[in-house]
Length: 444
Image (cartoon, rainbow, N blue to C red; front, side, top):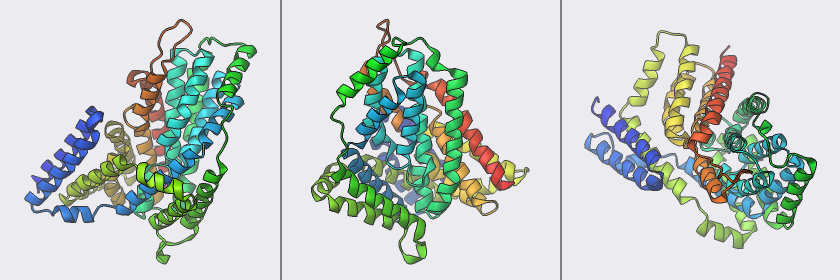
């Protein structure tokens, strides 16, 4: 047992470290790690590859793939371009309003669709607006940083917004309504606190701007309007996706599992219905736009976590946590802080998949929403700590580099790990405090 609890977790940790250090080889590394975990598990007599694959939560993978296709369909309706143009006009090119408008908009969008899809479509528009406004380095870092954190919070707000919440829904840890009623208010508190601290304390909007008068702001809005004057929502594409999403939400809310209409089946049928209503687009999305990379990454992750589970490490960790000579409340606090830190190091997917087994042990001894929603919020905090902790971070960095933004003196603006770090530390502190406060209130 000692060998298995050293070798199998070692394979998992080494794989996660390598994929974080070499993101260009991420998929190859995790697939190789999963193969080694299967080999080690068979050699130790803990199970075969077939048994490990049988324990993979395929329902969660089905939901992730299906919701990804629905996100692609909504993106093809050009609704995000329309949203970006409306946000530009609403903000009037005022730095504070731009920050708040785009952050709130991305929070809402990320609760319904894949936040990476929304970011890819909205961020280029925002970057053009920032270039027209003539922003400085400090404002760029805090604006884009707050935008990424808002995406993370939006994903944590609903059971279909991001992987941790989908995992809780798919495994039956919480129902759709229960998660939404607990997580949505908590994430709104975190978003409000973040924006308040940024605008009132940090005040990046106070940095001198190139366009400071009403005429400059009006010119920026006018230029954006001219660039995106043809941004129109394709209602024949959006309507079936929106209708089927509404039916899926009703199904998740009203249909109990005892009817056989489990969350993954509701998702599968709903997305299939949306694609059938637009058959040509649906066939194209199925052939060309399925997120195979994410599915393979998570499949490999689940295999490695399953191998570690068979070693008994998670069971022992839960027993060790329960044996700490402190109150159950302090045990939960320690667990949530650990979850946030591990997520910052290894990203949300691996942390949530591994820690959920420990969380289930805690949930048998105290209020389940305090454990599960607290865990989801802590994972969200960790995802916001470093630029590399969430998938959208490197993508935002790439898009910003391609835009080649410059300040009024012609200096190239940057948005990378170092520039994001102050935003990440502040966001981690705020969201982690909200997670701890929420758990504390629930237990008391």
